[in-house]
Amino acid sequence: MNVATFYRFVPIDDPESVAVHLRALTSELELYGTILLAHEGINATVTGAAPAVQTFFARLQQDVRFADMPLRYSRGDPGNPIFYRMKVRVRRELIAMYCDQVDPAVRTGVHVDAAAWNRLLDDPEITVIDARNRYEIALGTFPGALDPDTRSFREFPRFAQQLDPRQHSRVAMFCTGGIRCEKASAYLLELGFAEVYQLDGGVLNYLATVGADNRYDGECFVFDQRVTVSDDLEQGVYASCHACRRALTQADTTSPDYVVDVSCAYCVGEQTATQRAAFAERARQSLLAAARGERHVGAVMRGAINEALLEQG
Image (tube, rainbow, N blue to C red; front, top):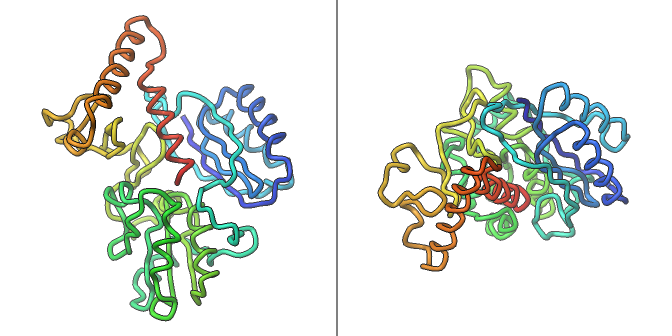
């Protein structure tokens, strides 16, 4: 099972008509995943049989707006679906930041490959920024990287405005697949930062290309049913709490506070009685659906949560 991620910031005057075309194409090829379209471009993760993914991408690139668009591959277990449906949506922004003055199609940070990135990590004058969210950073990051302590990408401008371009004149930033850094680096340049670099293709491409000199510590959170991937891009060891979205170790799942689809030790005290009852009912309906041989309702709902996180950044 191939997993392909891609994005491009490019003007699209007709995102709704592109969405109609891609819905038909992905249905024909039996692909699953999430494709987001906006006037500013495209952002997607699709999964399916390798020939189908390759056919989809070849036909997509026949559109001049998407020609030569980089495609990043990772792997999934055919017995553990990564997505449970195909969703093609039109949004105001590909990654919500709510900063209209930023246009990544015009100017972004300098893209660097894995080898150049490692050299930047060794440069004492470089400020390294992890552009991801707190729940992602908790699972893995590059040692010494600044943590913006954000819950979603729309909070990144607040963090950036607290940095002093004179003190942090040279910045290197990274995210999961690169798209958040396109906007984040463009925003830092607008704020007056002198040199801004970004890890090309994000952590996923770094792990795929870096070889033995891997500086990334931990696993990388991904916005699908795998939860995380390890340094060889195979599915990681973490599970996920479907109530609060925190990643869980094997030990976490043995806690008496861990109830599948309802709570974990991290969020059990955060829920109201009404919320716990709603989560428990969702779990009950999932079991009933499974007994009837239907698609696992809880899995579909968890897939929807992952897709919402992807849209939020």
